[in-house]
Length: 211
Length: 314
Image 1 (cartoon, one colour):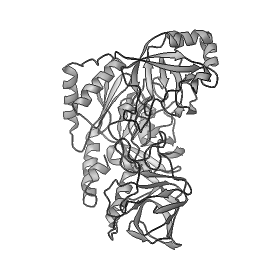
Image 2: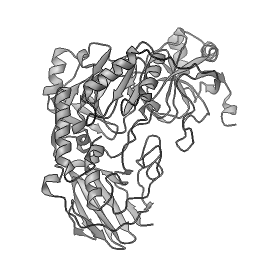
Image 3: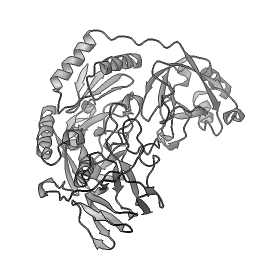
């Protein structure tokens, strides 16, 4: 479903983050607009309303969808992300135990025990939405977001893990932090995590954090 | 070094063009919050419209020129002096070595732009020299000016120009901004939809390069107020849980989890950079076709003085 939402925007409803990424890649490759932004269940296309006619853009998007959405190639590689859980690194872990009735060990086991996939990158540079979290760890976003969440923070909300590539305000329940640099504007490839990538979390000690 | 920062002002950053086409990686636009005023300032010193310049918010800086330099000032209305003598905005100005420029508090409007002949030297990252304060890149080490900073100018001789009266972007404390319905506008109840386009909103204290919170009526949405994160751009108006519309600006995150209840028309997004706390603003509802028409009209008007206006108001 395609909705015009402004003079230079369309929002397209899709079924899943994977489909959003696939459609966004497909539309991006056709050079259809200025921005193609995949979300969790949407793709937003911003076009140049001074040079492009909205009707034509709409038809081109519809034609691309009708031709079939080419699934993205599943990533073979698996990235292991070290995380210090709890304490000053994961200040909400104790509250999460209370909320879920799980022990710290249970939570770490659930979080490190599966291979997850990156659903989406966005919000701030390199912020990764990582899907597939166990239902027992499903909690909503915090009512009062923090004004500052440190870079590398690992949060959970709405069935996903969020990785803060840089310090920013944020409303996720913080369970740990990784020493990995996830975004470096000066690097050839500024982003470590890309949509579709598979990741697994590994518990490390606070001593190992700075090592 | 060409310019020494004696006082940095409240929030002075080097800004240029936005970063476009990178939102899928989480890279926001950055760039001048009022790109029209940036272009007008650069025009007066013979620069390309997006040469790196200073954007100063609410309270301007004090700068000392270490060698002669052409410069120009546009945007918000503020008292400006060079060595204690009042100087005018919207005209090419010339400083000699040792001259001190004082830009006072903005009286009307929020942001003053200071362009220098040849443009400021700035770090180009991901296709633009604009400062991204949140991620800390671009501009001057990715941060706002501090006391003692030294700015380098890429020298060029400046022309002698004055902005014609017809092209002096008017700043005000009472604004009208055209906006279209967006993806989740239908989640507003009937009263809220009425309020959205008929309230004389007041710009809240929370007004910066991330966005502007509007006060004046409480809107309610039919959903629980949360939705899966979806793409947003500058000018997207969200309805957060407190029911106060939040208009995203140039530094806003690339996706958001609140209903998108309206979208400021491309033609009027540049105005958002001049809205300051306490200003009044009305949202004028337009159909997309009408907003496109307004865009063409505005571009046609400005093209005479700013040939690159299509890029400026992109």
